[in-house]
Image 1: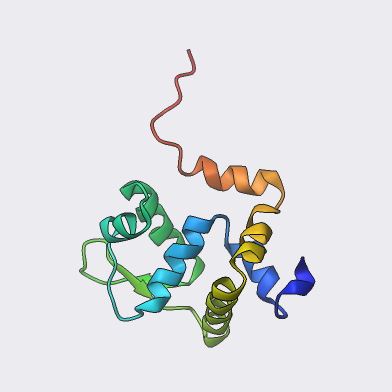
Image 2 (image 1 turned 120 degrees about the vertical axis):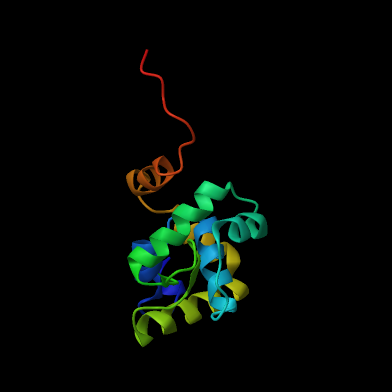
Length: 130
């Protein structure tokens, strides 16, 4: 599947994209780079729980795809750490628009433990060990 994508893009997907909602949230931020997004807006746009959308935004900041806007009460905007990252995300947007199934297949073909680790971050409520 690596040969289906431009050089470096499949590695970017494997290292940074764990789900389709995460991908779509990132592309939503990229589409309006000057807009400041809150978790509620991302949640509404992508039909996600608000806490899951907030986790995605915080993760984007941690990975260097977005920044927390100072004095904004938890609002983020698209701001890749460097031009190479911006170009990869731009390339990802174009490939996802043209070959959505291939991108989704690559995302979900990752080893199960990485996907499970990401999914665990979105568990709702606490497990009852009793």
